[in-house]
Amino acid sequence: MVCDMETGVCGVVGEDEMEVVDFNKPQNTIDLYYVTDPICSHCWALEPVLRRFTEQYGAHFKVHTVLGGLLEKWGGGPVDPANGINGPADVAGHWREVGEQTRMPIDGTLWYDNPVHSSYPPSRVFKVIQKQDEALATIFLRRAREAVFAFNQNIAEKSVLVGIMNKLGLDGEEIFNEAESTSGQKLLDEDFALAARLGARGFPTIIMVNEENKGVKIVGGRPFEYYVAGLKQVLEVEETQPKQQPSLSNLLEKEELLFSKEVEVMYDVEKGDIDKFVQKELSSSDYQEKEILGETYFVTNESYKGK
Picture 1: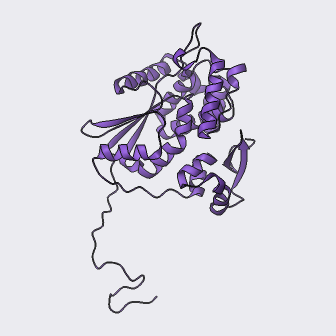
Picture 2 (picture 1 turned 60 degrees about the horizontal axis):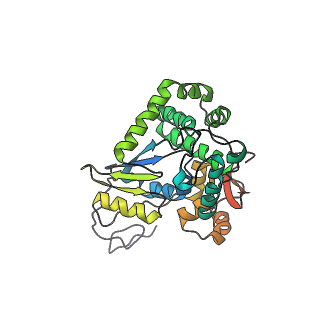
Picture 3 (picture 1 turned 90 degrees about the vertical axis):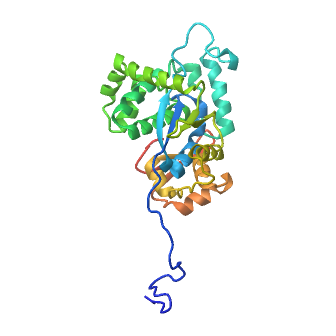
């Protein structure tokens, strides 16, 4: 309530007399193509970094999720002999190693007794949902990955996919039937063709392209700084101001489930400090802390009951 007689300011004193302010938000001048697959373990491991990159720099680009078809089916011979994948059981050890190294929980024991026979069924479902609602399709893909990696559910099975969709308020039965029709496969084939044109031969692949059709391609799961550097290169700038990270309460309300690693990456918190940080940021009545495969995760009280 105090006004400064010299500056003529009522309120906080110390502002410059005149400054240039740009209220224009950055435009989506960059197309970001994310080539992935529902059962790609390194894509699952990339989620913490990709979420932070999108939250802080997403105003500069439009995301296009492209599915590449990691596993059509298991045949009589090896699927990926170069990496020692000759049958479903070989995937279990690979998944377990990725989970332990990256700390994004992966069970993987379903490969022994109830293996995913193909990544095409969840991919086709994603494409059908994406045709109607891009944001909802992204949520579906996240839920499918939580189901298969952390909670060891076979997302090639109709009952699992329908259950995920129904929890999102969708008509799971109707969407699944459309996904399994020729139109569902046609949508997926269009993604395969796009991935080929982009030159993506492995997952995950991030390709950022500017208006001049120049860009960068980043293959594999990389640290956060790689993607920021790639964006600057495509924007042809030395610096770009990141958006402030959302509060943990807002982020958890939006995502409904976050693993400890995701919180650590988003807010630059050490693993040993995570409990203290979460208790400071969240009300105890708003969330539950749980554990799976030796890793902590957080859920809102209104979601994921029983998990």
